[in-house]
Image (cartoon, rainbow, N blue to C red):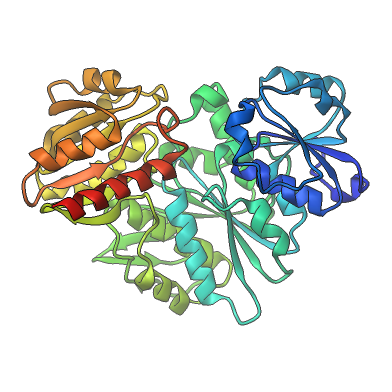
Length: 463
């Protein structure tokens, strides 16, 4: 495997290429410019699309749009933004010229002074677990040490990691894209929460997707730890390849180190004489119990005291866009689950509401990601009064869910919200949980979620 990014290998004044000028691409461009490199940014979007978003970039930075030119072949190295497909022609050219390509994650970590990295990955639940883990470490670290958040959670790691000090702890959400592109990362504690088919259009196969996820523990050693979901057969099988201490959460069974019993979360890791019982965070759904188990195990693996874990559990209110309560409008309880960008994530949300009866109006749709929506049928039949479809995948959703609930073809989010609030009755629930990517009608899932909340706020004022 090629060597990891080492800043000392490249002289100041050399040109660094940055492929993709989204949020992480812009952050790493600024970082490299601060470190004395000339920077050439390259993006496939048009000048008009990029001009406004790139106003904050260094003035000395050069950038190109509408594709990736051979100017990149004169760079000392190139940083690949997560999400760019590895089969682009420019990567073949860079390989022919033996120009190294690094991930934004790896470059950011190379400029970090922190010696402790906690890395969290999985198909679903990453952001909630990462945010909760961060809150635990903030509560548990002694004075003079900081817990620093970054990665796929929305704060580019290139923006936060370089400010770290040796005794700080980096808490990083890692996507499969970021891990795929990384040659070497070595977390002191890591977690794989679950794995279901996702992003296969990018990775090409399930094996490639698993290989990317497994990078979170590949470089760990005996003194490190990785947390695994024992109830997920794919994760459990993958855990056998882990070289570090393996910690499992799940339903009570042999070799599980965290489980739920009697309304509390139980923990017992190697070396403990007694098990510990903690009150779980007040968040809906079995999946959030699992997220809390994983966060607790990560903290205990790094020596955080139980009192700090319990304090964070009691204070934690969840993350934006993940089954986020948005108040009551016209007697209808509203929830923003815009971060549900795949079918399995929407399935998790439906399970969280399954015990409340058939009272859901579900907004679904967006950019289709290749997975069928039929697995949702049993839960739609049990809990959903109406499905309101939006975006490019609307017709496919209607076909897959036909007969399980009434479908309202709405086209866009504003129409879906208005329709739901018109037909719903007092006590019903409106849930935005799209099961699709957002890029057909929105900048990203965050934009989609915030527009949903704005529409609800306008409806509340008008009522």
